[in-house]
Image (cartoon, helix red, strand yellow):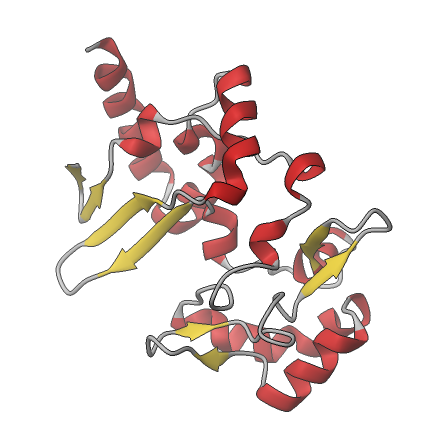
Length: 190
């Protein structure tokens, strides 16, 4: 672990490789798990505000759950998250003809229906961020369903922090990311 500004960052995001391999995993991270995608406070308001714009891109099952549970819920851990359909896939998940899960919010964004791309936790995955009173922890969330992504990342030689560059910049800013790159260069020289 190393400190970068007000963050504590795991070296694992520098030392491990990762590139999503949707052909292999079919977007299982949007389907499996014990909870919806983690949300920060401001994202709860955004999800309410954009729901009408995103709704045409969602599946009927997702719409039904959002209209029943709300655009977001408080999870068992007390934190905000997206609702689930039947305790499984994210209510905002959509599926391709080949059965690959993708984000309905991101589809709406790509089609110009909203300016919100997707929850930052999804943009950052497999990096997980945890806010504490004084610092923010930045860690790698290792999950066996992502083994194909680790293999592809290794084959392409893309470290996690580079794979989630846009998400890290969105969360922490350009300056923070530039400092992370410098630390990574020094770290890989060792």
